Image 1 (cartoon, rainbow, N blue to C red):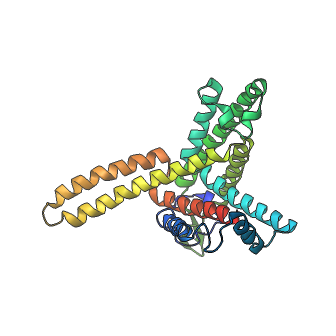
Image 2 (cartoon, rainbow, N blue to C red):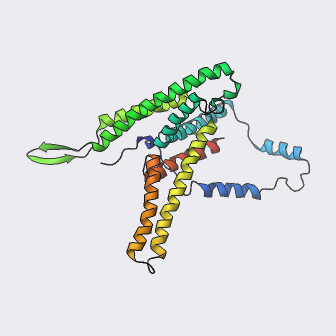
Image 3 (cartoon, one colour):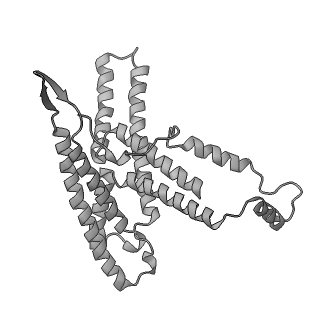
Length: 278
């Protein structure tokens, strides 16, 4: 049975992001670098600024609300991807325990943490840990549900004396998984994480996928370049070393590389659309 990854449901992949969408960002940066800071003949920067501002239509109240809604919608997409990944959930659970022990500074993790009094931060530390433990409980249940789903055998139906295989997924179990996912995301929102923390998790995902992608490229290059000079067994031995490293990374992350790439496409799309909305 195909593995079930429900945290990407309902999202379209959009345009090809390729290497994390870096080509699109490079083009934007190059375009900005080509744009002169001062227009010829415009000596006064204040005049230039006012001229540029006059060319930009002012947003109506409805327009501001729509932009804010769009930004929040795309941020939610990013959150849904990042915090539906086993790797990130395990890190959040560990972070909660570090906060409780004082190893991680809560003020740098939660929104408006710097403005809280020491007394209030002590209460928040306790609350933060308790929420992460609830996430841990939901995550453990999720692993059990996914194991059951993986082990589910298609039902054999008897109709008119003939037997056929019912390969439709067990919808009751999938519904339970979807509810579990929503419960986890609700608890993540309760943590009130700073946007920088979420960005750190997403950047870690990108770095890991880039590293695994490089390992796959090395395997491809070995097969291509050494096919003439080396025996098949020597080539396979070197490729196997890289394959084991890939498997180790996948084990740490809790999912296969193909699903990591799928997560990345959704993540990059969400981050890009947040920037565009701004």
